Image (cartoon, rainbow, N blue to C red; front, side, top):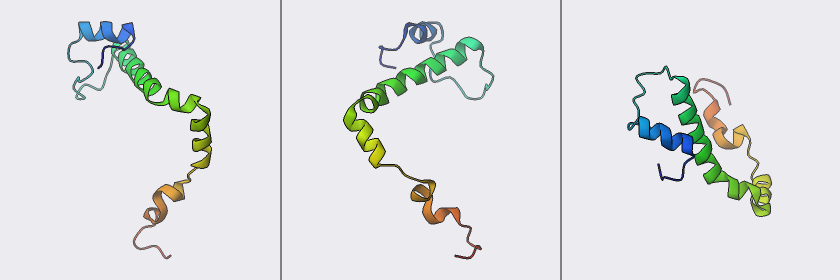
Length: 84
């Protein structure tokens, strides 16, 4: 955490010092914990992607880089025993 997170996230951190590094052994989150992680994820995503996605050059690059599943995975989708 960098300190510029929304107040809700910072308040949750003050009340739960292990946040956001709480154990994954307990997979049942209460509403406050779920919202804190959701809000933190939204904050991180907005910081990472918004400036690039909102600019004209970012949109042009995104349109030029349309990849398909085959582009990403290619031959890895075939099993060793399948015919080519």
